Length: 412
Image 1: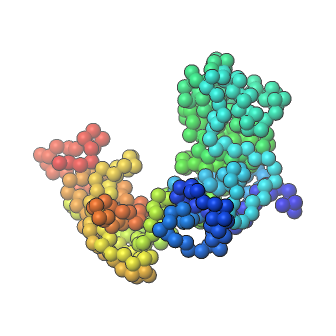
Image 2: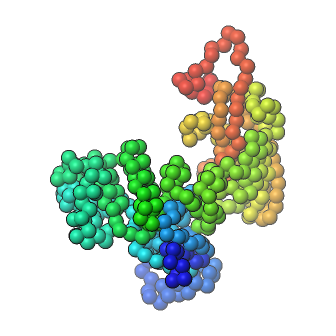
Image 3: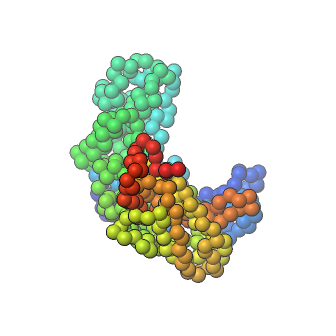
């Protein structure tokens, strides 16, 4: 990396594999054999859990320059925290190479090393030492650390008597005053009150702009990513799928790029990290008859297209409705045996959603493909954020005018 003094981080074709299952009593010979199997990427016996490997990251490459604030976003299980642990050298990559030019400070778990019996002041010295600061550095910065934490009145009180907000404020303040070239943060700004969060964001931007430090920031809060970062990476199932402008990355992550008011193209939609199977994928959704982009009747027909990645049958779909203000379904309709096929097959189907008891309003939807287990549990195969629905039926004279905010979305 000597050829570019402004380059502080270079990730080249990095991958990280984990072995699934419990730790066994295998011999060193067995461990070496498994390692060789992993390096050759062989398909091993799936009946034995400790012989199966999971790729948390696969073929990730990017560079970061001095003074950049880079956001890293993706669903749970996308590989964000694994990537930060590799850069922090908490663990090593299975494949590829990581080059770092400078000192790295990791804030992966704010407050690690705090002792409840020690005072706030004593914990500043303890935590600062754990994070790599010398005592002379802490002496020089302790007044600034205490002032930033807003815990001046309680700094000589044992931290076991602190509220959770005070605890994380003090911990973040220590970490924010580290002299490091690269600062790594994993959801650490989800601390304290809104005022303190803005204070933390401004501190990070000041560090990057005035001191030329690099910030790598992982969060599910898109507002803080948009405020802090000037570049964003999107991870999906361990792969880097986007590297560029923050607003474009957020639109991709939220699925905004794939939708119009009446159609959705799910071919490149980022699936949630908790999905463990990819037997079948929705590729398209469209409202068949959506006059004036609103529903005035009691039903809505939706047409879907799909592609089978594996042989599958008896696939159903759940259409889940949620209020636009609350990310939690309040009504769901299930349809059974609507899709099937062999690997590579494509198909389509339509469903008619019953909205007769849903009151006027704007609603979000989710579409989930599933199959039934022998115990009639739903095993989810695909899940996407669906099209929005606007219900606007004319009011009937003599009927009670519905107060949606007070009485809910369903009229029994």
